[in-house]
Amino acid sequence: MPRFSRDELMAALDHYTKVVEVCSSTGDWGPFAELFTEDVHYIEHAYGEMHGREAVRDWIIGVMKPFPHMRFPHTWVAIDEENGAIVTEIINALDHPTEPGKVFGFPNITRLVYAGDNLFSSEEDVYNPVRDAPQAVGEWLQAGGVMQAEPMAAKHG
Image (cartoon, rainbow, N blue to C red; front, side, top):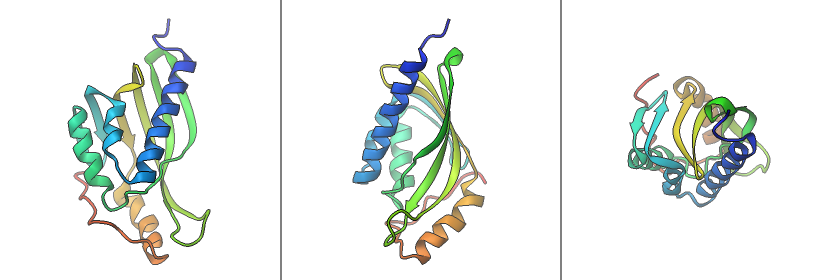
């Protein structure tokens, strides 16, 4: 018998999505860390592994500094009730600075493991920003986008 129902998993994803949207809107990524348990295990294929909510907070604030308003809409979702997991394709999206509706982006597959109470005990982001980001970010910069800080160097490629 599944530990969490499909409805609860979808509600948790909806909460996650709303928090990420607020972070993107405000440029304050600190609240993103509050989506996770204190002992979260976060695997980020370009930046390494993080253990604990505060490590995730430090990382997300640093990695989002150049692009505080990047958005992360998802295109599809798969629910694994048996393991309390959600797998989704997320687009790392930068909006065109002057043409509403035009977006520069690249895909990312994310797996979240739900722990209850709108908290996740694990996230794994599977993508290759070293390969995929330069074109999207380059086109965004050519269109007039401006980085707010130097990008964080990836640990893996």
